[in-house]
Length: 421
Image (cartoon, rainbow, N blue to C red; front, side, top):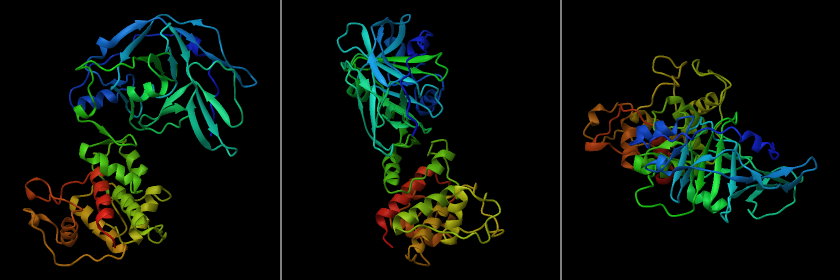
């Protein structure tokens, strides 16, 4: 794992200061997500960010590291021209999309005694003799030093904002996804009167926030949930009802990062046959405790060999979970969308691969029962009777409606919870 040394040129880079962009607070899910996905700003969960904006003049007390790894705190340094910040109380969430340019190169400074001198914050990361991460802790703001970098203890002053909720620290591998930070978490980590500066890669633009550590006045804070926006622990967009099922799918090893990435971290979109095959194989392995295997015999001609999806699809085929298209067994149609009745059928085949049996000749009480394909009827009847796949409004099943990724994860978790082959 690469370890970053202290970047002592911060003050020089910090001389380039611009005005802080404060986009208006969005109303509604679509507008909020659009704001979060802007690459050049950070979404702020307050009703009016501009009302909390102010310019402050700071002195930065920085740490420096010599060639021998000795880290010392320098003299007080006069900071650059006034920094434009947004003062944030407790209870506020910051959010950024997968491609935001301010995810790395974040510096943190604290002024607990309010004297105008902001001390640069460090994080000590400990590794074992095999270079495996052991622990991390924030160096106290009043630490005088000197500190020494060793083979197993490294200090970082540049923080990174990783995917998911409150993933923030030194030397964090960035995996694209949605990012959120709460001011409560940050104040607990660094203390009140803390300045956070989010810099872009070129270090010619920044976004700055000053944590007050005080309770928010009434009517200031707006939550993501109030806007209809929900994220999973892995930083995926999900529906409100899907938060717990998606988290359960992660815990039960049904979740797929391949599917997550192909949907650009938005699990509300429709799932494809290839993607459902991945989740179905994960489900089989989680329920059976066995590794799914495949042979190279008669591969599908429309699935690229040597890819991870190819291996999953071939495993699903050899388990009997999926089959070729009706027109020819040589093609699979990995990009075709999965209908709700298709999902029931593939899940029933997972159950059969586990040794279970699907009763034949059954029917359902859905008002659109006659719209369910004869080839899927037994599967729909069985899965709905077990409460694994539920109907839609008006007691409709909507057999030809497209299943979403989060729905696929939910029914996979329901199957694990309710069936034991």
